[in-house]
Length: 317
Image 1 (cartoon, rainbow, N blue to C red):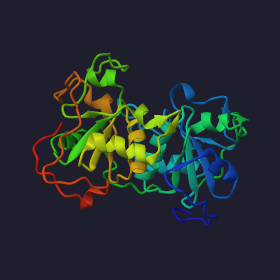
Image 2 (cartoon, helix red, strand yellow; image 1 turned 135 degrees about the horizontal axis):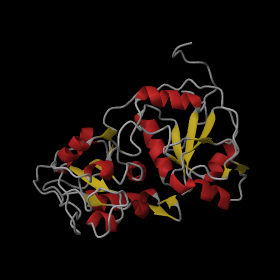
Image 3 (cartoon, rainbow, N blue to C red; image 1 turned 90 degrees about the vertical axis):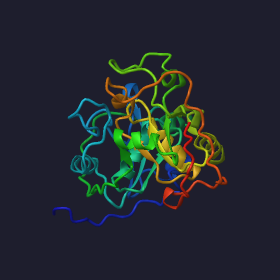
Image 4 (cartoon, helix red, strand yellow; image 1 turned 180 degrees about the horizontal axis):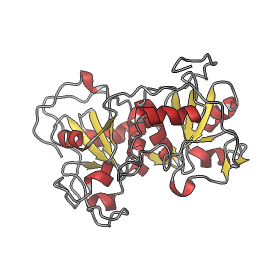
């Protein structure tokens, strides 16, 4: 059959990049809807799951283990192979979740988007919200592999970036690099949890701990998210997002999307790469304040940087 598409019923239309448990509960088990559990760490392989949920294993097959960095993107061929093995078709609608609320599910959402698949949303509040609503759970017992899907990855350049692109963004007064790690890790007042990494942050980066985008395990309302990003990004519409290993940076990507930003990029290697001993600069302390506004520019609703007026100021916080 090669890569020829097989006809499948299309999944339900999504209301946006985030869906609630009620939305999912009304459609669970319907044609063309696939639920993927992207839990990592202690939540990976939990004893209970949403009925029919399949494991999107970021700690395992859905990361590139050929290099030293954790959680980096597999190539398009490997991603296609793994998504087909999960039974995902190009016409499906995918809802991703995790056991920590909104955490690694955002990484799965961003990965799918970066591979050209737009029919995907994050379950707001994840497995805890589903359980709190009294909705059905099942034992996470081994099940037969699903029928192979016809998903094909079509990578979109620029959604994941490397260290050189981050360095360029740090020097670009029209861009801002947002770091999703905790304030203690950002300032370097605590040691990094991964051995061998320097403590601190990139000069000019701005700290936005990913937890500040959530409330009770769910994403904050769009108007609150807009206020958070506007306070830190100023007039800059080019957002480059970093964290410890490229996972919670995607929570920032989700928050920015809900706030109306478009065209943001995630630093795939994140601090696991930048923090390694190297010539890449690292600073400590509480700098990384919000950047100064660009002279002569009025505040605009966040939009694609393709239509943004360039900032000519040399100031970059």
